[in-house]
Length: 159
Image (tube, rainbow, N blue to C red; front, side, top):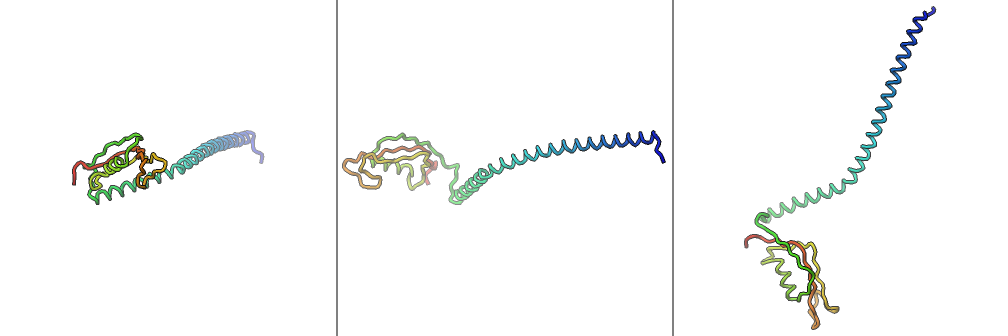
């Protein structure tokens, strides 16, 4: 059985059409594969970036949890933040006698320890070579060099 010339041309046309459709589908698949590879690379880079930020996020979470604990403790102790205020303290390094240094440091605690000093910078040093911070003053003692920078917190009203 011989296929007629028209039949052969029809088979050739259908085969060519199927081949063209198959090539088009393969090119679409390759294009989609390249897109997926690019997206995979982007996702890997995003994952790496997020993993590098994870310790910072965990640290912030710890800080937030600790802040909540401090707030709860303040509430248990009856400390109302609305009844407290603060003042900035900034004292440049200067010579001060031991007695004046003691008075100044006691003032930072207030009466019955009802206020406190949150230091940003605090430096107390002896100025005499043989003197010590925790030893009795020598006759040639020149006092201390004292620097204080920070915030003093205290209640609006006395207890």
